[in-house]
Length: 53
Image (cartoon, rainbow, N blue to C red; front, top):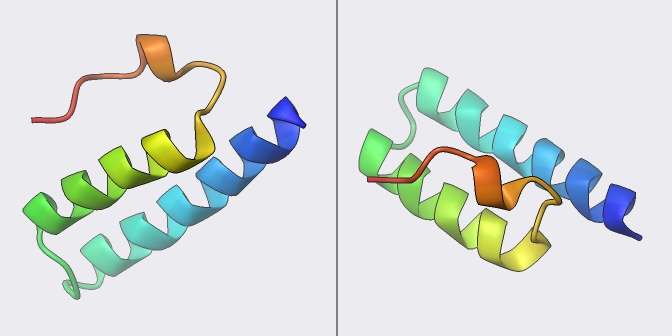
């Protein structure tokens, strides 16, 4: 189950990164999505991931 959550987190983060790269969302929006994704999917390594500003 934990690996599925990590995979799901990776996939939604990848999608958010693509949106950011395409200029469809701002860095602020990307950071908000990242925080929502961390809260939703609780990746195993969330404790050591960089803080979102």
